[in-house]
Amino acid sequence: MRTSSLAEADAQSMFELLEAHWLQVGFCRTTRWVAKAGIGLLLEWLKRARGSIWQERGESAAEEDQSLDWRRATGASNNKELYGVGLALRALMCHRIIRPSYERLYEFRRLTEELHKTTDRDDFGRVIAEATKLGISGPRRRASSASWPRCSSATERRSTRSPPKI
Image (tube, one colour):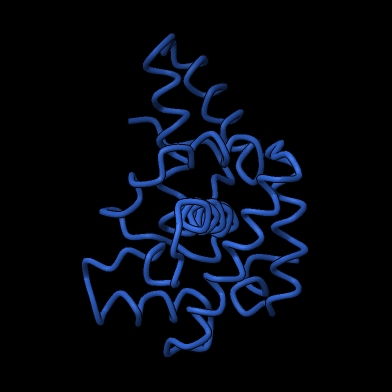
């Protein structure tokens, strides 16, 4: 399923995609169960918001309350449910179904790791290869490889070619 069709995907298609995603990340059965419950809460909440695609619904909910904590807004009532909604949000960001604002982007601490294991594996490799060619080493190379995919999850852009030389 391409990203454009994912934006309008039904809940069942979303469950199937994210189940495969969580297996790729390496989540155990219990964590996948918690994440599945989280996506259920999240999608039910987003279905009630204005908009025809998931991103529009999220934006309309955020317009109503700029300080909105999506995890709590879903009705998650305990730590396990809050954790599950967070896992679901990260997976949706990896697949560019939901794109957070830059202000919210860094609230998701493990997003870079998850992007690296799933949807952006090739992007990480390209950035590292280019940095190596340019003589960038060690911590600076790792930082550059972490920045591009994280920012691309907010903009919906993917790395299809090498970054420009500056």
